[in-house]
Image (cartoon, rainbow, N blue to C red; front, side):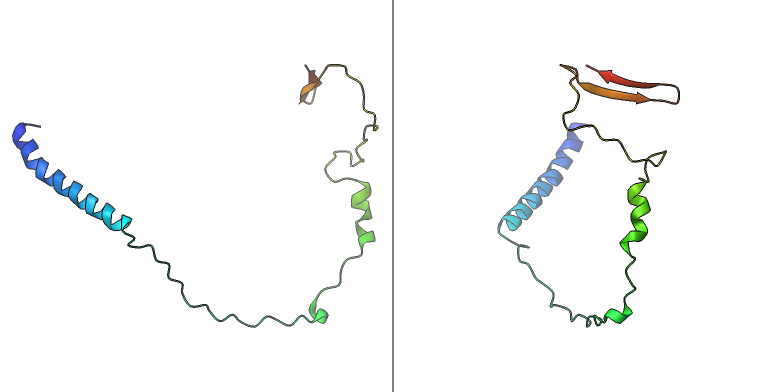
Amino acid sequence: MNAAQQRRLTPVLAGVVVLLGILLLVLLGGVGRGTRWAPPRTLPALPSADRADLPQATPLQQFSVVWDKPLFNPDRKPVAHASEGGSNLGDLELTGIIITPSLRMALLH
């Protein structure tokens, strides 16, 4: 860019700066701060709460198989929980577990 182009560009950039300054002052003055709410809509009436329209609840005894045989275990047997005392591993801490079809490994630190 030569000097002649810079001289032509300077008034344009100055005008942009002036316009942005005016916009900043207008926004700082509070234009656009007001909140205008639309009037509330009328809501349709709620349906009647007649219990005859509701389906009958399924008895809980029907789900006892799910409680006895967990869904997310491959053998569908309940998980054996450790005793309350736990086991003493000294200063070892479980840091990871690797499970593959041919390998089952616990990483201790």
